[in-house]
Image 1 (tube, helix red, strand yellow):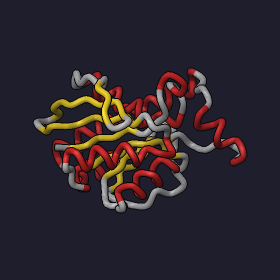
Image 2: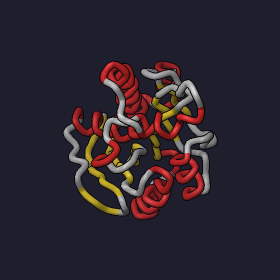
Image 3: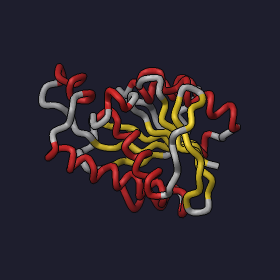
Image 4: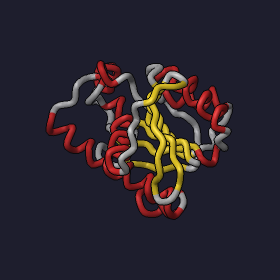
Length: 185
């Protein structure tokens, strides 16, 4: 069983923001595989289903980004998921919009949601997909850049990254992370 977590902020207030790319990917996967992500548990919306013969739990923590790890830890403990079967999807300012980066493990960098997940799990050894959002022209605009509304033309570019991330999840479940990294990185 795989625990697939998309990081974001509650969609009522933050849908269509760069910081919700993780949620957008979960929504894309859920739609493609007819998985209803509408149950509530452990401070998250979640749904279970099958992808490429593998049981998955799709999770969208509702704790706000900076506390995402609280929800993730509860799912890991309850379902007894090993780190090798955890996949976290999130936005990344250091990756070009429309592109993704897949990693087997690694530090959280400057991403507060990932800092929370790494801290809660006590480990950096889990898979992750970073969805590129690019960086604002001025670093002082970062907060408004990541949680502000995205204009249509920019959103179309970001949706390419969401699609690639969705496809890469399928590839990971079907052929493993090494093949997915070679194909998508």
